[in-house]
Length: 119
Image (cartoon, rainbow, N blue to C red):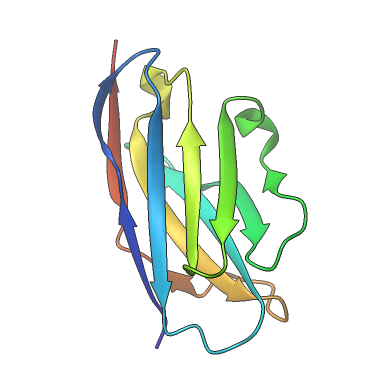
């Protein structure tokens, strides 16, 4: 059973940076795509970025390019999201998700970590 554990969320001020981490366990296949999603208060969950744990270029939602950087460490089975120049509109619960490269949908999700950006 895949388990994803996010950490690194918190309360920051506008302009600050924050790094989220997601540690995965129970990954039984050789190739996984890991992703970050976020859900702002009162809004739908939205895709942030994804990356293959076995390398390859990261993929970002257009609105996330420039300030957010996703990276992965296959040896640690972990994925990270470096966020810079945070703004109040980045306030959201950030979720880590995983799928094998054979699947089209993310079926394994973490519990989420809250990021709150004050103005």
